[in-house]
Amino acid sequence: MSRALFLLLGTLTACKTEDKTGEGQTDTGGGGDDGGTDGTTDGADGAEPCESTPEFVSPINGGDAHFYLDPIEVELSDADPTASLSLADAEGNPLSGTVSFRDDGELLSFQPDSPLSPSSTYTATVTTCSAEGSASFSTSSLGNPISSELAGRTYAVELSLARLIEPAGVGDLLLGSLENVIFVGVESVSDTEIAMLGAIDDPETGVQDYCSPSIPFPAATWDNPTFQVGPADTTLNVSGLDVTINSLSIRGTFAEDGSYFGGGRLEGELDARVLGPLLEVCNLLLGFGVACEACVSDGAPYCVSVLADQIQAFAAGDPLVCVAAEDCHPLCAGSTCEDPTAGECL
Image (cartoon, rainbow, N blue to C red; front, side):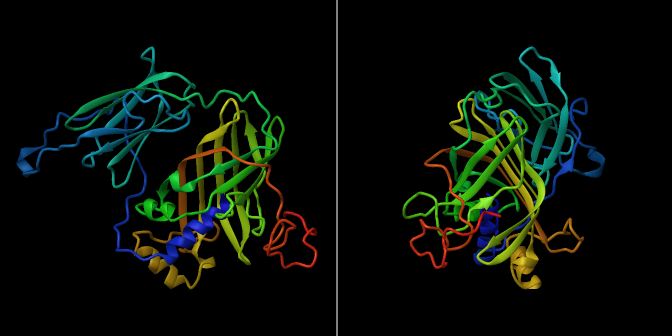
């Protein structure tokens, strides 16, 4: 997936579209007992009454597949800093968590302090300055320990079906233009660690592209049934170019039978200095409402944060093989190296 992350942002620099306004950054908001107002304002200052209608977007009322680690999200018709969002279990016991706003204050979220229980029922309640609402929902079975062997299995990830949260406002453009399927192969699993290998597909055959280097992931922790890669700075070689993704983090949770993993989340920071001339790249990004920000590594204002969630991957095909270099593997029809059996995955 890390190779796909670079390809995805490379697509951004190659596309042209109309200017878009950037969306706001996440702020910490109040919740719980700091509930909404009665919808009135001080008439002396001539301000119009506050009106903000809430709508649950994740999960929806009656939903039965909420991921146990995901936040509760409510879309507001108008930004309302007084809005509150709370969560209770099936017995009505309130759960602690953090309330925050993003998208210019029009998306309200509640992140529970502890993971929700799989296959369980909950009720979320939202209050704004002019309305109230609630949603009863159930979590999916993801979160139950796996009961099957994972080593040797391969999973196909379609990032075009994921949700791109950052860079804000360009998700459909970027993810919709990503054509390659990303394969993730499990090489080994211990009590605390999982080793995985990545690869892209050959669009003509639908199997691993044996002419493109495979992607060795950093060491991942394993807390059955969830894996966590990073966060770690990861350097990849993409078409001969060394690309460093700062603080790359990838998370996913395997289903009990190992048939897929869901709740996938990918985040990191891409340094625009590897994509081309600084002013050209950052100015082009501004055309999409995306501003280069200070890099974690050195504070220089040339980085772009990337965050995608709702990633799923389903079992597919044979175990992945190591491809050490471009056009250099026995199964690559266009292999150009003298000894395609030489070399190892780095």
